[in-house]
Length: 289
Ligand code: DGL
Image (cartoon, helix red, strand yellow):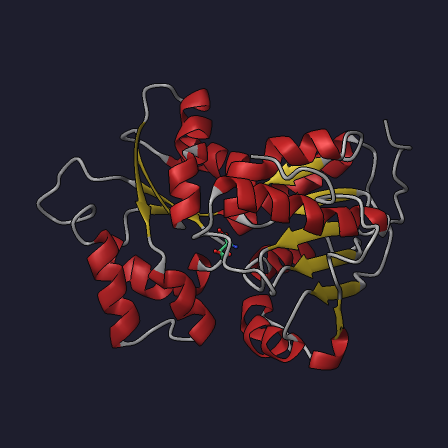
């Protein structure tokens, strides 16, 4: 069991790349007195198209770096990593509070739905892992869950094509049938189960219509993190200091990430880190299958 973390330590936020900055943005708004240490594994993204064993290995390696730098809790902002690697992370970092985005999103969806039909859109890996339906059914066994992989949304968000014809046509193609006028049993709640999808809220809302409740896991995880800090008596009294780490391409991180964070990031602000220096502990042994 690790020593109890200090209140003054930063909150660690981990994502496969820049997408988790949407979660960081919500965290900073909800918790202005906390300092944050964010790591985007830009050298190895996307996680959403990779196999579960690879994502678990990457997630453990990346998070180990944050743990080594003395974080007081870990927010796994990446839905794909949360979906497949959370149990392995909780085991590896016993004693450190670790929170993922799936359970808060599932709880918010269960609270929002009236007809019990919840749609979840996410990456291929998150949908394949089945974590959202499992978390929803744990809370509401009678719920109907329709999950759809919307992989192209990730590229559109990073390209900044968040509105206009291409984004609208992708949203229509992914969601049109599920939310079509002919389907009177269509979902009344939609979970944005990927860090990037809040960037496409305009075209998504245009297809699903005004009556569907849209659950943004960024906002829900910020509330859950606040509760987690309270429960562990770990609330900080900092001034919102932000440290950004990336495993590759700091210029791209700064350019693309600024829109996700909603705040200008300079490339000079980003510290480049290597997850595989000789001697680093996590991932050095047999990779989890
Ligand atoms: N961060 C990932 C997620 O939320 C999306 C990007 C990726 O596939 O790595 O699932």
